[in-house]
Length: 452
Image (cartoon, rainbow, N blue to C red):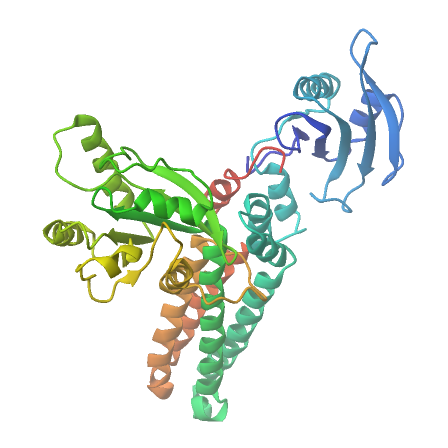
C-alpha cells in the first residue's frame, strides 16, 4: 500500500441501505477515466447530473458526479466522487463498471485507509490529523466527536510542532556553543538554557495531561462489575445503563457469562462488563463463566467490587479481593444500602454505599469512577489521543528529564545535553509523522475503514 501509484476506488459511505451512497476515485490525471465513464469531460468542482450505463447501454444509475482537480482535493490528487442511490447491490454495480472502464488507466480497489494515506503523503494533513479522521468516525460520545474534530483541525499537531520548535532553538544554542569552545562562554547562564528547558518541560507535561484525557475520550474505560453471586451486579448494570440489559433474579448464579453495555458518564465512554458471580462451583457452565470473569478483571481499567453486607460471606470477600491483580484499581462498593437500616450488618470500611434498587448513591459512585480513571471533568479544548501518542510523549519526557541532569553539569556535559534534546525531538516528531517508518505507517492506516 505504501508505494502504489495507481488510481484507486472504493465506496466511501457506510455499508447498508441508504438514500445516498458515495463512490470515491482518486489518482493522477483522472480525465481519461472520467471520459470513459460519461463520454465527456467534467468541469472541476461542479455538480453534474449524469447517467452511468453498463456494457449493453442499460442504465445502472442516474447520479451526481463532482470532479476535484489536484491539488485542491482531499487526497491532493485528482478526485472523482459519484453520489449514487444508496443500495448495496447498486453500489457494487457502479464499482464494477468503473473498474471495467478504468482498467486501461490502472484503476484498482482501495485498501483500508488508502485515501487518507495519500492525503498524508501529499502533505494535505499530518499523521495526527489523519488519525483524527478515523477517531472522528469511531467517536463514541459527543465529547469524543468534538475532541477528534479539534485534532483534525490541527490543535494537537500545533502544540506538538510548537514544542519541537522550542527544543530546536534550544539545540541550536547548545550546539553553537560546542562549535566554539574557545569562547569559554558559560552557556547555561548566559543563554538562560535552564529556564528555557523548564518551560519546555512544563509545556510537555501539559500536552501529556491533555493526551491522557484524550485517550479516555477515544477509547473509553473498561469497567468490570465483580463480586460474589447475588450481590446486585446485574442490578447495578441496569441502573447505570438506564434499562434492563441484564437478567435479575433472586437466584444466585443467574449471570453465567459476561454481559457488556456501553454508556457515557459526563461525556466519557464507559464499557461496563457484568460478570458471573465469583465462587467455587461444580457447575461446568457456571465455572466457564467465572473463568471469563477473571479474564475480564485482568484487562479492566477499573474493577467495581460489589459486596452485600447482609450476605454474611466476609471470608469470600477477602478471598476474591486477594486474587484481583495489584495493578488493577479496585473501587469497593456496598450495595443494598436500603436494607442496612433494618439489619445489624456493617459495610466494609471505606466502601461507597449505594442501592441499585432505589438509585441511592449512584451519582456519588459515578464521580468516584471518573476520579479514579483520571478524568478531570474538563472537555473544553480537549483533543483525542491514542496510546501511540502517549508513548511518544512519555519517551520525550524521559529524555527531557535526562537533559536536565546533564544541564546541571554545566559545560562539561553539553554534548549529552544536546543528544537528549535531539532524542526528545525525534519522539515528538513521530506523533505528526515527520519521523516514522513505512512499516509503522502501513500498520496505522490499515486500521482505517475502506473508502477513507
